[in-house]
Length: 82
Image 1 (tube, helix red, strand yellow):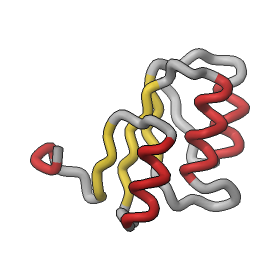
Image 2 (cartoon, helix red, strand yellow; image 1 turned 45 degrees about the vertical axis):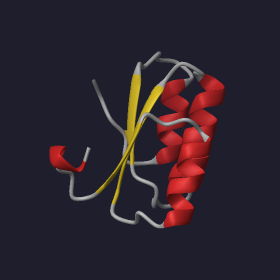
Image 3 (cartoon, rainbow, N blue to C red; image 1 turned 60 degrees about the horizontal axis):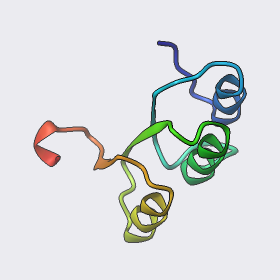
């Protein structure tokens, strides 16, 4: 699988390639992770989403849960945090 560090390029790729899972951060340049997730779900409603973030504010968690992501984990990642 290939990846993108630019959310807008990731959305363009989602329009041409069907992915089962997307792993994203919430804080990014240009387009934040919540908007990326919402737009990804419009393009591919069945895509699973894992959010790994270094910014786990209560507001960010609430917004992420509203778009039905699978896992929300603070960064740095640790399997014990699940």
